[in-house]
Length: 118
Image (cartoon, rainbow, N blue to C red; front, side, top):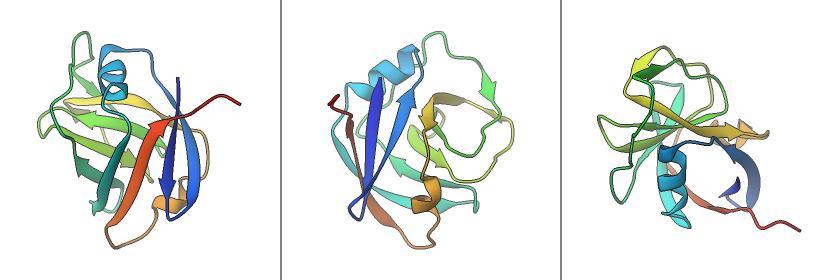
């Protein structure tokens, strides 16, 4: 499943992983979130509710472009730089390209929605 993330009129697409957490995330869309910087590697935002982590691995090592769910805090985390192995981090998907739009120091709004096939 493809999603679109729009930031200041610039849209990037992402491909969601095939897992219970991604399907639960998809059920929340469309969403408009305020993303803020965390640890100079990722943009984070609270979600309206916690997501299912059924069958999810205990941890993951995130890479640039990964869209993830951090279960301990219940938030979305989109990596614009490589991270480190983190317990409770679940991969939701990967940005297909254009994640440079995330590299800004101040908080910003992003709209996330299902990508409509053309």
